[in-house]
Image (cartoon, rainbow over all chains, first blue to last red; front, side, top):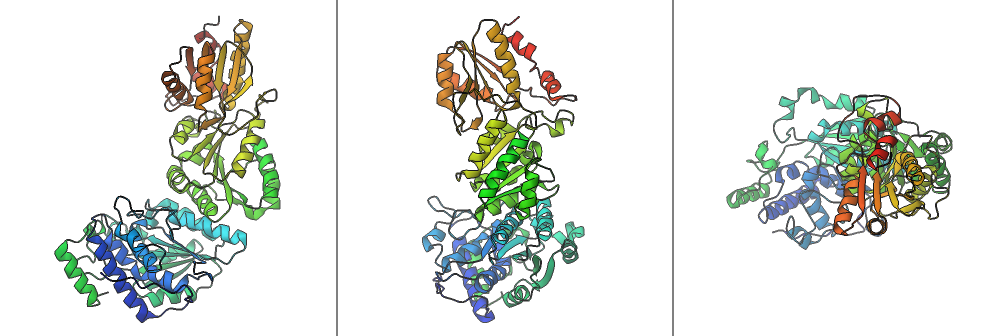
Length: 283
Length: 306
């Protein structure tokens, strides 16, 4: 099991080193796999699809206060992907190693969906289609207060099937929330099927979002630098949606594009194979 | 009630910059127009989009504001139910959800607009406090409490307009979570809340005329319910009557029965609620209450008054 390497509180953000990011993401995936051997309740594949996105947010975009706390807000709307957030928060020293060791266990405080009130968690999510609405309210509040706090919200592509997400898309644009950045983890899988096959009308999404008044960027969701650059290059006069093309289960051959890995946890042999593939740097 | 809410919110909002109102394409009338004009950034209309109305208030509260969500009761509670439950109640945020026209107030609009189960549903969600004032004065007091409390979400159920003042002569002040005697009496005690209070007073008048001295209590806070005071009333009066504009399941009536059982009350208990039915009929608010069996003559007949 890898040891977390705490990030110095004084670290300056808004810069991004791709080689460091690759090593971090390997470490995160290993840690997630380790935890998967302790409990079976786990969404490994959806955490692997958004590993680079979440890393780019925490290690590139989110600014810190002098005391080390985050100035900006990150809200994990796709709550089932929270393992990646937990392992990053563990490395940041915001969650403890014991917290993660007790993941989904009695006496612990981390479940398979994030919970408001837990350190580092901006909202209780898990039921899909809630996060962007809450993030819109948060961005609206920060704008009303006259602060420069940015709100980053990560959604699954499946969440864009919820009408509530489109209500939020409308309102965030109506309110000109330039401090709101949403990321879509476009791994193309809902629980049942490939979205591009079962829900063709969902695509193309970029022009739908633009027609709703959003700025849109399209990137490779496993290229942290591309994600970081897309956000830094935004016009910042309206909300930004970063469409991140991703692979569900990224990094492990037998998980990639296989829907059952939304739900299941690797057995001992699968764990060894997955670890080896991650070490070899498939992701 | 609606106008008094708006007046009170305007006064409070002038003093507290954290107060915001998020509406879903409905005018809260009266002073809110002034509030909107003076503080346009704190008046947000989401349009006909109730889920974002609730979702946004959650995010606003998390970032230090004190938002109210405001629309017709069915659309403030039923349409965005999961947002009320998950975003507000699960996260226990100090947001007030205002439901205008609780019960069958929107009597000409059909059952799509009848919030006949709102109190039952709201009372069943953990962390959600439920307040249903009976008149403008209670509305002002409740609004003030909602705007200044920090403990969690509240469902504030209001009438529409034109409710008379029932509590001017009340000896007891309004206090959150406390039952309030608003008319003294010795023999019978009527428990009621919300706009149907007008019928409670009409029934009390008939009881008094028949020589059965009737007290009336406003049970304005449905959750947390003042169980101790209800048990005391059940012990003290020979007869207790519940009159409410709410579906029977999960109603005040059901809970008073439960308190009567657990407190081993021996008084006579009569309850009058809306029926467990959708009514396919139209007319005035009074017509709809009559249709649900809540006419004053029907209640009086059930109470043995000729």
